Length: 396
Image 1 (cartoon, rainbow, N blue to C red):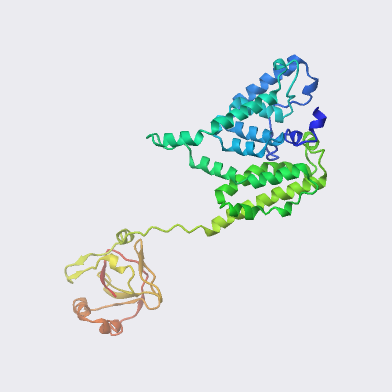
Image 2: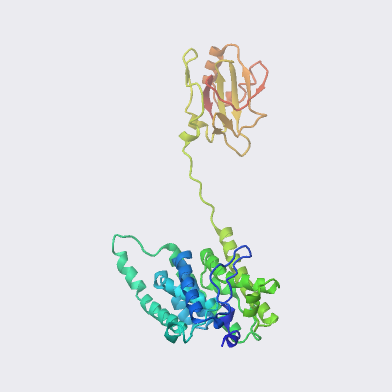
């Protein structure tokens, strides 16, 4: 019976789940269990059940059962149904039994469990889980009326919606199982299918990871570095048949990666929250008033967006102006003026500040254009720094 099973998908799925070369599967193996005595078989079974109970969590059971169902050729409707039920419907015992069967455990022995077929027990448990799962939606709707909050997480909803998108993919896998010679991996347009089902990046990531397990396994097989058990599992398939299935799984991976990349490109950039003007100029140090000269600084927030700023240094007696660069405006960063044209932003030392500043206050826009030119002093370039000695005179 064991040799006949190698010609179906059952034995193929009974190999170790090679996720990556860096990770070893330490779960119990059942190699040669057909030749074991009753005591040895029973003892190994108990150790295996203890392993899955102690070394795994509740999330391992459902994937294990789904994988077993795929290997024994269960109806695709049943596989989709078990995918949709809540994880809690699949007991840890079901997951452990499925894992043991996948690892090569003989399903039926006259000297074990009264001669009952383990696969029949698992099938019955799956039917019961599917039947019980039909009420999940109704139960959740009733719970939503209670103030306990939502039960189903967003991740669970996305996962359930994703599994519903894989029906055509499962059809293609089934077609390869039945007739691998005539299977054409290029005839199935995965990208068009997923776009038609409105698959988003989150759905694509789940689908890619789900089928990526089989792809990693087959790539290791095709590399010629697979272990004996993996090679034996696919011994009934030719290299050409394996290559076709690899191409199909790579098409799934490429389609999912493309959807994820498109989502990144089309994602709208996050709008930056506008910073209040008061916060921008909060660190600006300036002289608010000067009693001898009767000067009062303007509100520093007026600098933001201005084209011109006049300042006076009460210590050095320098009068100057900042001129914004072309197509830009003045700004403030910390204690510094930004966005000014260094060539046009200059200052000059004035000899009689009282008279000159009084004249400055009375000057209009036209007079201010040449106000610095009329001062007989050397031009000095402005450096943008504002300190406690500087009065902010005017903006334009």
